[in-house]
Image 1 (tube, rainbow, N blue to C red):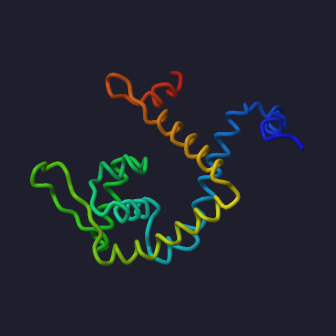
Image 2: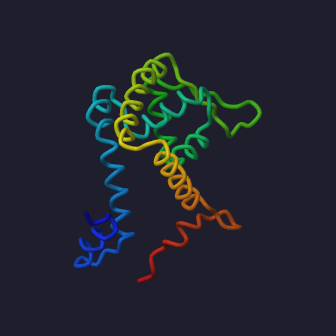
Image 3: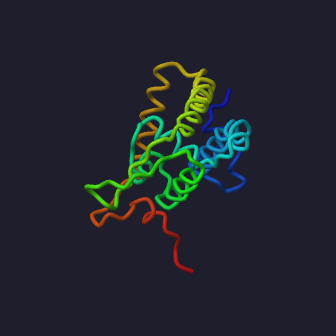
Length: 175
């Protein structure tokens, strides 16, 4: 049986895609496949977007948090988090309270309705996790955890001026 690296090299030799390029596309495919249960079972039923779901799950897990902390935790940009907060506040799912000590910070907590949705959706998230990781043993799960956190660290690294090293390194050449 041919290993994944050899198979990807064979599959992509004619198309010019490198192994790393094919692996990146596989990660994107994995992300899309992971979202299928959300879009199939939750999005329409509960009228919730993916970013709102991420916000709901983050606040539900943390109890109380700030928008920038949700952005850091989820990797979703601050503007998208802000839009999700506004929608969830309008829909009565999240309570927003300005921090008296820091007027720029807004504390987010789930309302009764938000907590009800969290209690419905958290088991669904666990079901997805149990399904996808069921073929991996504890050692493989630990290795995957290490690799994922190394990749996240690389993507979140900043230079001395606070710029994203990733975005600077992947900037397209000028035309």
